Length: 125
Image 1: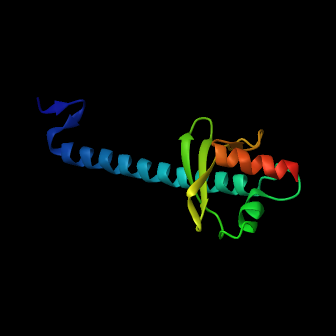
Image 2: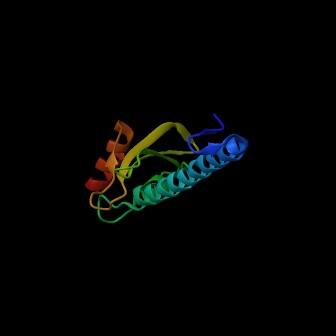
């Protein structure tokens, strides 16, 4: 029983430490990728021009409620699907939610009523 899985008994602490280090490194890297994807999705949602002239950011900022504050949450790493949620400082209870696919083939989509109303008003302009 001096060896288990080809690892000598005195080397088990080192092997376990290496596995823990690998797990921590992978977790840190995944967090970095998720943060990068969230930033890209926020930029895509805020620079989207559904009406052709103004961006979503321009329309929200023009309301006089302050610059929109946005967060992104990766829903699917495989598909590059990110949920973007924005609100303005003077109307923090109103969230504008968008779903963004990072492949760039489709534009962001409104994911709640407030975002749908915002986009409908932009298209009518």
